[in-house]
Image 1 (cartoon, rainbow, N blue to C red):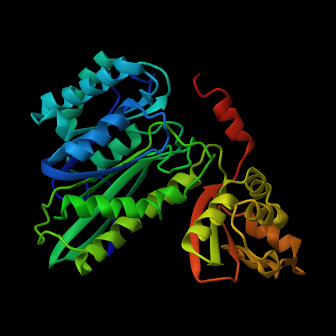
Image 2: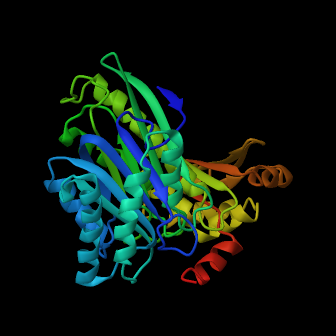
Length: 406
Protein backbone atom coordinates (compact mmCIF):
# COMPACT_ATOMS: atom_id res chain seq x y z
CA UNK A 1 0.00 0.00 0.00
CA UNK A 2 1.24 3.48 -0.87
CA UNK A 3 0.00 6.80 0.47
CA UNK A 4 -0.79 9.18 -2.39
CA UNK A 5 -2.03 12.74 -2.73
CA UNK A 6 -5.69 13.47 -3.11
CA UNK A 7 -9.10 12.51 -1.84
CA UNK A 8 -12.33 11.53 -3.58
CA UNK A 9 -10.91 12.04 -7.09
CA UNK A 10 -7.83 9.85 -6.54
CA UNK A 11 -9.56 6.72 -7.83
CA UNK A 12 -10.17 6.30 -11.56
CA UNK A 13 -13.54 7.31 -12.91
CA UNK A 14 -14.44 9.80 -10.19
CA UNK A 15 -15.03 13.53 -10.53
CA UNK A 16 -15.89 16.15 -7.92
CA UNK A 17 -16.16 19.82 -7.15
CA UNK A 18 -17.28 22.25 -4.50
CA UNK A 19 -18.94 25.63 -5.02
CA UNK A 20 -20.57 28.58 -3.31
CA UNK A 21 -24.27 28.23 -4.09
CA UNK A 22 -25.68 30.76 -1.62
CA UNK A 23 -26.79 28.68 1.34
CA UNK A 24 -24.17 30.29 3.56
CA UNK A 25 -23.19 33.94 3.61
CA UNK A 26 -19.75 33.54 2.04
CA UNK A 27 -18.09 30.11 2.21
CA UNK A 28 -18.47 27.21 -0.22
CA UNK A 29 -21.60 25.27 0.65
CA UNK A 30 -22.30 22.56 -1.95
CA UNK A 31 -20.26 19.61 -3.19
CA UNK A 32 -20.73 16.83 -5.69
CA UNK A 33 -18.87 13.54 -6.07
CA UNK A 34 -19.66 11.68 -9.28
CA UNK A 35 -18.70 8.33 -10.79
CA UNK A 36 -18.56 8.37 -14.57
CA UNK A 37 -19.88 4.80 -14.58
CA UNK A 38 -22.45 3.11 -12.31
CA UNK A 39 -20.94 2.08 -8.98
CA UNK A 40 -21.75 -0.17 -6.06
CA UNK A 41 -22.80 1.79 -2.97
CA UNK A 42 -22.68 1.12 0.77
CA UNK A 43 -23.14 3.23 3.86
CA UNK A 44 -23.26 3.46 7.63
CA UNK A 45 -25.39 5.99 9.44
CA UNK A 46 -26.16 7.71 12.72
CA UNK A 47 -27.67 5.67 15.53
CA UNK A 48 -29.56 8.73 16.72
CA UNK A 49 -33.33 8.03 16.73
CA UNK A 50 -33.77 11.52 15.28
CA UNK A 51 -32.52 11.07 11.73
CA UNK A 52 -32.17 13.86 9.18
CA UNK A 53 -33.98 13.63 5.83
CA UNK A 54 -30.81 12.76 3.86
CA UNK A 55 -29.98 9.94 6.27
CA UNK A 56 -33.39 8.34 5.75
CA UNK A 57 -33.01 8.76 1.98
CA UNK A 58 -29.51 7.24 1.91
CA UNK A 59 -30.53 4.24 4.00
CA UNK A 60 -33.23 3.49 1.42
CA UNK A 61 -30.83 4.02 -1.52
CA UNK A 62 -28.24 1.72 0.08
CA UNK A 63 -30.79 -1.05 0.60
CA UNK A 64 -32.78 -0.81 -2.61
CA UNK A 65 -30.70 0.71 -5.45
CA UNK A 66 -28.82 -1.60 -7.79
CA UNK A 67 -26.20 1.08 -8.35
CA UNK A 68 -25.27 4.60 -7.32
CA UNK A 69 -23.41 7.26 -9.24
CA UNK A 70 -23.35 10.50 -7.24
CA UNK A 71 -23.23 12.03 -3.79
CA UNK A 72 -24.50 15.60 -3.43
CA UNK A 73 -23.72 17.38 -0.17
CA UNK A 74 -24.58 20.74 1.31
CA UNK A 75 -23.37 22.60 4.39
CA UNK A 76 -25.15 25.31 6.32
CA UNK A 77 -28.51 23.56 6.74
CA UNK A 78 -28.82 20.06 8.24
CA UNK A 79 -32.35 19.35 6.95
CA UNK A 80 -33.07 17.60 10.26
CA UNK A 81 -36.32 17.90 12.23
CA UNK A 82 -37.95 19.44 9.16
CA UNK A 83 -40.90 17.06 8.75
CA UNK A 84 -42.47 16.04 5.46
CA UNK A 85 -41.29 19.23 3.78
CA UNK A 86 -37.70 18.33 4.61
CA UNK A 87 -38.12 14.88 3.05
CA UNK A 88 -39.61 16.44 -0.09
CA UNK A 89 -36.80 18.99 -0.32
CA UNK A 90 -34.17 16.28 0.10
CA UNK A 91 -35.66 14.32 -2.79
CA UNK A 92 -35.74 17.53 -4.84
CA UNK A 93 -32.01 17.96 -4.17
CA UNK A 94 -31.37 14.41 -5.38
CA UNK A 95 -33.63 14.94 -8.39
CA UNK A 96 -31.84 18.16 -9.34
CA UNK A 97 -28.56 16.25 -9.56
CA UNK A 98 -30.18 13.32 -11.33
CA UNK A 99 -31.58 15.68 -13.97
CA UNK A 100 -28.33 17.49 -14.74
CA UNK A 101 -26.27 14.27 -14.72
CA UNK A 102 -28.90 12.22 -16.59
CA UNK A 103 -28.97 9.43 -14.01
CA UNK A 104 -31.82 7.88 -11.96
CA UNK A 105 -32.78 9.76 -8.82
CA UNK A 106 -32.27 6.61 -6.72
CA UNK A 107 -28.64 6.55 -7.84
CA UNK A 108 -27.99 9.80 -5.97
CA UNK A 109 -26.89 9.88 -2.35
CA UNK A 110 -27.56 13.09 -0.39
CA UNK A 111 -25.88 14.53 2.69
CA UNK A 112 -26.47 17.70 4.68
CA UNK A 113 -24.76 19.37 7.61
CA UNK A 114 -25.40 22.56 9.54
CA UNK A 115 -28.13 24.02 11.69
CA UNK A 116 -30.96 21.68 12.74
CA UNK A 117 -34.57 22.74 12.20
CA UNK A 118 -34.24 25.02 9.18
CA UNK A 119 -35.86 24.19 5.86
CA UNK A 120 -33.59 23.86 2.83
CA UNK A 121 -33.47 26.83 0.45
CA UNK A 122 -34.48 24.45 -2.31
CA UNK A 123 -34.36 26.94 -5.17
CA UNK A 124 -30.74 27.72 -4.26
CA UNK A 125 -29.99 23.99 -4.03
CA UNK A 126 -31.51 23.28 -7.43
CA UNK A 127 -29.54 26.06 -9.09
CA UNK A 128 -26.45 24.86 -7.25
CA UNK A 129 -26.83 21.42 -8.83
CA UNK A 130 -26.43 23.00 -12.27
CA UNK A 131 -23.34 24.88 -11.15
CA UNK A 132 -21.84 21.71 -9.68
CA UNK A 133 -22.37 19.72 -12.87
CA UNK A 134 -20.64 22.41 -14.92
CA UNK A 135 -17.56 22.41 -12.66
CA UNK A 136 -16.93 18.67 -12.29
CA UNK A 137 -13.30 17.59 -12.82
CA UNK A 138 -11.22 14.55 -11.96
CA UNK A 139 -8.06 16.27 -10.70
CA UNK A 140 -6.73 16.65 -7.16
CA UNK A 141 -7.89 20.25 -6.85
CA UNK A 142 -11.48 19.25 -7.66
CA UNK A 143 -11.47 16.76 -4.82
CA UNK A 144 -10.12 19.40 -2.46
CA UNK A 145 -12.87 21.83 -3.47
CA UNK A 146 -15.45 19.22 -2.52
CA UNK A 147 -13.77 18.61 0.85
CA UNK A 148 -13.74 22.33 1.54
CA UNK A 149 -17.41 22.80 0.64
CA UNK A 150 -18.69 20.39 3.30
CA UNK A 151 -16.93 22.14 6.21
CA UNK A 152 -18.96 23.78 8.99
CA UNK A 153 -16.95 24.66 12.10
CA UNK A 154 -14.00 22.65 10.75
CA UNK A 155 -10.83 24.72 10.58
CA UNK A 156 -9.37 22.71 7.70
CA UNK A 157 -10.55 20.19 5.10
CA UNK A 158 -9.85 16.49 5.57
CA UNK A 159 -8.70 14.19 2.77
CA UNK A 160 -6.69 10.99 2.38
CA UNK A 161 -5.87 8.55 -0.43
CA UNK A 162 -3.89 5.36 -1.00
CA UNK A 163 -3.04 2.99 -3.84
CA UNK A 164 -2.53 -0.77 -3.65
CA UNK A 165 -2.32 -3.78 -5.95
CA UNK A 166 -5.12 -6.32 -6.41
CA UNK A 167 -4.98 -9.08 -9.02
CA UNK A 168 -2.02 -7.33 -10.67
CA UNK A 169 -4.01 -4.11 -11.06
CA UNK A 170 -3.33 -0.80 -9.35
CA UNK A 171 -6.34 0.12 -7.24
CA UNK A 172 -6.91 3.49 -5.60
CA UNK A 173 -9.07 4.50 -2.67
CA UNK A 174 -9.61 8.03 -1.40
CA UNK A 175 -11.90 9.86 0.94
CA UNK A 176 -12.98 13.13 2.49
CA UNK A 177 -14.72 13.87 5.76
CA UNK A 178 -16.03 16.75 7.80
CA UNK A 179 -16.57 16.89 11.51
CA UNK A 180 -15.50 19.16 14.31
CA UNK A 181 -18.35 19.32 16.81
CA UNK A 182 -21.31 17.14 17.80
CA UNK A 183 -18.87 14.28 17.29
CA UNK A 184 -19.50 10.99 19.02
CA UNK A 185 -19.89 8.59 16.13
CA UNK A 186 -21.92 5.46 16.38
CA UNK A 187 -22.15 6.73 13.58
CA UNK A 188 -22.15 10.25 14.92
CA UNK A 189 -21.79 13.84 13.75
CA UNK A 190 -19.70 13.62 10.70
CA UNK A 191 -20.02 13.23 6.97
CA UNK A 192 -17.65 11.05 5.01
CA UNK A 193 -17.40 9.99 1.38
CA UNK A 194 -15.02 7.28 0.19
CA UNK A 195 -14.44 6.39 -3.45
CA UNK A 196 -12.56 3.45 -4.94
CA UNK A 197 -12.11 1.95 -8.39
CA UNK A 198 -12.01 -1.62 -7.06
CA UNK A 199 -14.41 -4.28 -8.32
CA UNK A 200 -16.15 -5.85 -5.31
CA UNK A 201 -19.58 -7.27 -4.56
CA UNK A 202 -22.15 -5.04 -2.88
CA UNK A 203 -22.47 -7.45 0.03
CA UNK A 204 -18.74 -7.49 0.78
CA UNK A 205 -18.43 -3.72 0.33
CA UNK A 206 -21.14 -3.16 2.94
CA UNK A 207 -19.65 -5.75 5.26
CA UNK A 208 -16.18 -4.21 4.99
CA UNK A 209 -17.49 -0.71 5.69
CA UNK A 210 -19.67 -1.78 8.62
CA UNK A 211 -16.78 -3.63 10.23
CA UNK A 212 -14.33 -0.82 9.57
CA UNK A 213 -16.27 1.97 11.28
CA UNK A 214 -16.07 0.06 14.55
CA UNK A 215 -12.29 0.58 14.50
CA UNK A 216 -12.18 4.05 12.95
CA UNK A 217 -14.98 6.62 13.05
CA UNK A 218 -16.80 4.96 15.95
CA UNK A 219 -13.67 5.36 18.06
CA UNK A 220 -13.73 9.16 17.78
CA UNK A 221 -15.36 11.51 20.24
CA UNK A 222 -15.17 15.29 20.59
CA UNK A 223 -18.15 16.10 22.80
CA UNK A 224 -20.28 12.95 23.35
CA UNK A 225 -23.09 14.34 21.18
CA UNK A 226 -24.26 11.95 18.46
CA UNK A 227 -25.57 13.88 15.47
CA UNK A 228 -28.79 13.52 13.53
CA UNK A 229 -26.93 13.57 10.22
CA UNK A 230 -23.89 11.29 10.45
CA UNK A 231 -23.27 9.35 7.27
CA UNK A 232 -20.33 7.49 5.79
CA UNK A 233 -20.86 6.60 2.14
CA UNK A 234 -18.67 4.59 -0.22
CA UNK A 235 -18.84 4.08 -3.98
CA UNK A 236 -16.86 1.36 -5.79
CA UNK A 237 -16.99 1.59 -9.59
CA UNK A 238 -14.73 -1.29 -10.71
CA UNK A 239 -12.75 0.81 -13.20
CA UNK A 240 -9.43 -0.61 -11.91
CA UNK A 241 -10.30 -3.82 -13.75
CA UNK A 242 -9.42 -6.33 -11.07
CA UNK A 243 -11.23 -9.65 -10.84
CA UNK A 244 -14.45 -9.06 -8.90
CA UNK A 245 -13.94 -9.77 -5.20
CA UNK A 246 -16.71 -12.17 -4.22
CA UNK A 247 -15.14 -13.90 -1.22
CA UNK A 248 -13.22 -12.94 1.92
CA UNK A 249 -9.89 -13.86 0.39
CA UNK A 250 -6.47 -12.21 0.42
CA UNK A 251 -7.62 -9.51 -1.99
CA UNK A 252 -10.49 -8.66 0.35
CA UNK A 253 -8.09 -8.34 3.28
CA UNK A 254 -5.82 -6.02 1.28
CA UNK A 255 -8.83 -3.85 0.45
CA UNK A 256 -9.93 -3.78 4.11
CA UNK A 257 -6.46 -2.68 5.19
CA UNK A 258 -6.48 0.17 2.67
CA UNK A 259 -9.98 1.22 3.69
CA UNK A 260 -8.99 1.25 7.35
CA UNK A 261 -5.91 3.34 6.68
CA UNK A 262 -7.99 6.05 5.00
CA UNK A 263 -10.83 6.00 7.52
CA UNK A 264 -8.43 6.01 10.48
CA UNK A 265 -6.50 8.93 9.03
CA UNK A 266 -9.72 10.89 8.51
CA UNK A 267 -10.90 9.96 12.01
CA UNK A 268 -7.73 11.31 13.61
CA UNK A 269 -7.96 14.50 11.58
CA UNK A 270 -11.52 15.01 12.80
CA UNK A 271 -10.50 14.44 16.41
CA UNK A 272 -7.58 16.85 16.12
CA UNK A 273 -9.89 19.48 14.63
CA UNK A 274 -12.48 19.22 17.38
CA UNK A 275 -14.19 22.52 18.10
CA UNK A 276 -11.80 24.69 20.09
CA UNK A 277 -9.25 21.87 20.32
CA UNK A 278 -5.56 22.57 20.78
CA UNK A 279 -4.35 18.98 20.55
CA UNK A 280 -5.16 15.44 19.42
CA UNK A 281 -5.63 13.08 22.36
CA UNK A 282 -5.21 9.36 21.69
CA UNK A 283 -6.06 6.68 24.24
CA UNK A 284 -4.86 3.09 23.95
CA UNK A 285 -6.11 0.36 26.25
CA UNK A 286 -3.99 -2.79 26.53
CA UNK A 287 -4.46 -6.07 28.37
CA UNK A 288 -8.25 -6.01 28.51
CA UNK A 289 -10.27 -9.16 28.99
CA UNK A 290 -12.18 -8.68 25.72
CA UNK A 291 -12.31 -6.37 22.73
CA UNK A 292 -15.62 -4.96 23.90
CA UNK A 293 -14.16 -4.10 27.30
CA UNK A 294 -11.14 -2.41 25.71
CA UNK A 295 -13.41 -0.30 23.51
CA UNK A 296 -15.66 0.72 26.42
CA UNK A 297 -12.76 1.79 28.64
CA UNK A 298 -10.91 3.68 25.91
CA UNK A 299 -14.05 5.63 24.99
CA UNK A 300 -14.84 6.31 28.64
CA UNK A 301 -11.43 7.96 29.03
CA UNK A 302 -11.59 9.88 25.76
CA UNK A 303 -15.03 11.30 26.55
CA UNK A 304 -14.37 12.38 30.14
CA UNK A 305 -14.70 16.16 30.43
CA UNK A 306 -12.34 16.16 33.42
CA UNK A 307 -9.70 14.20 31.53
CA UNK A 308 -10.09 16.46 28.49
CA UNK A 309 -9.72 19.64 30.54
CA UNK A 310 -6.64 18.23 32.27
CA UNK A 311 -5.11 17.53 28.85
CA UNK A 312 -5.92 21.10 27.81
CA UNK A 313 -4.17 22.39 30.93
CA UNK A 314 -1.15 20.09 30.42
CA UNK A 315 -1.92 18.64 33.85
CA UNK A 316 -0.89 15.02 34.49
CA UNK A 317 -3.92 14.44 36.71
CA UNK A 318 -3.89 10.67 36.22
CA UNK A 319 -6.54 10.12 38.88
CA UNK A 320 -9.13 11.42 36.42
CA UNK A 321 -8.16 8.71 33.95
CA UNK A 322 -8.49 5.94 36.51
CA UNK A 323 -11.80 7.45 37.61
CA UNK A 324 -13.12 7.37 34.02
CA UNK A 325 -12.01 3.77 33.70
CA UNK A 326 -13.74 2.90 36.95
CA UNK A 327 -17.17 4.20 35.97
CA UNK A 328 -17.02 2.73 32.46
CA UNK A 329 -19.02 -0.32 33.53
CA UNK A 330 -16.13 -2.73 32.96
CA UNK A 331 -14.86 -4.75 35.92
CA UNK A 332 -11.08 -4.80 36.30
CA UNK A 333 -8.46 -4.83 39.06
CA UNK A 334 -7.41 -1.20 39.69
CA UNK A 335 -4.38 -2.45 41.64
CA UNK A 336 -2.96 -3.94 38.43
CA UNK A 337 -3.27 -0.90 36.16
CA UNK A 338 -0.21 0.73 34.60
CA UNK A 339 -0.61 4.15 33.00
CA UNK A 340 1.68 6.01 30.59
CA UNK A 341 1.64 9.28 28.68
CA UNK A 342 3.73 10.04 25.62
CA UNK A 343 4.34 12.48 22.78
CA UNK A 344 7.25 13.49 20.59
CA UNK A 345 8.92 14.77 23.76
CA UNK A 346 9.08 11.35 25.38
CA UNK A 347 7.20 8.64 27.24
CA UNK A 348 6.53 8.63 30.98
CA UNK A 349 4.96 6.07 33.32
CA UNK A 350 2.63 7.81 35.75
CA UNK A 351 1.09 4.78 37.46
CA UNK A 352 2.36 1.27 38.23
CA UNK A 353 0.02 -1.31 39.71
CA UNK A 354 -2.56 1.33 40.55
CA UNK A 355 -0.21 3.70 42.37
CA UNK A 356 1.75 6.78 41.36
CA UNK A 357 5.35 6.39 40.29
CA UNK A 358 8.05 8.88 41.23
CA UNK A 359 7.60 10.72 37.94
CA UNK A 360 8.75 14.20 37.01
CA UNK A 361 5.88 16.70 36.91
CA UNK A 362 8.05 18.93 34.74
CA UNK A 363 8.54 16.20 32.14
CA UNK A 364 4.86 15.26 32.32
CA UNK A 365 3.86 18.86 31.57
CA UNK A 366 6.31 18.98 28.68
CA UNK A 367 4.90 15.78 27.18
CA UNK A 368 1.31 17.01 27.54
CA UNK A 369 2.14 20.36 25.94
CA UNK A 370 2.57 18.81 22.49
CA UNK A 371 0.03 18.92 19.65
CA UNK A 372 -0.45 15.13 19.77
CA UNK A 373 -0.64 13.35 23.11
CA UNK A 374 -1.20 9.68 23.86
CA UNK A 375 -2.26 7.93 27.07
CA UNK A 376 -1.87 4.17 27.46
CA UNK A 377 -3.65 2.14 30.12
CA UNK A 378 -2.55 -1.47 30.62
CA UNK A 379 -5.06 -3.55 32.60
CA UNK A 380 -2.87 -6.68 32.51
CA UNK A 381 -5.90 -8.96 32.56
CA UNK A 382 -6.05 -10.22 28.97
CA UNK A 383 -4.87 -9.73 25.38
CA UNK A 384 -7.49 -7.38 23.94
CA UNK A 385 -6.64 -3.82 22.85
CA UNK A 386 -8.46 -0.77 21.51
CA UNK A 387 -7.54 2.76 20.48
CA UNK A 388 -9.78 5.83 20.62
CA UNK A 389 -9.20 9.41 19.47
CA UNK A 390 -10.45 12.68 20.86
CA UNK A 391 -9.20 16.11 21.79
CA UNK A 392 -8.82 18.43 24.71
CA UNK A 393 -11.67 20.62 25.97
CA UNK A 394 -10.85 24.32 25.80
CA UNK A 395 -12.52 27.66 26.49
CA UNK A 396 -13.14 28.06 22.76
CA UNK A 397 -15.43 25.00 22.61
CA UNK A 398 -17.96 26.84 24.78
CA UNK A 399 -17.57 30.05 22.77
CA UNK A 400 -18.15 28.27 19.46
CA UNK A 401 -21.23 26.40 20.61
CA UNK A 402 -22.72 29.25 22.60
CA UNK A 403 -23.37 31.17 19.38
CA UNK A 404 -23.36 28.38 16.76
CA UNK A 405 -26.54 29.58 15.03
CA UNK A 406 -25.28 33.15 14.68
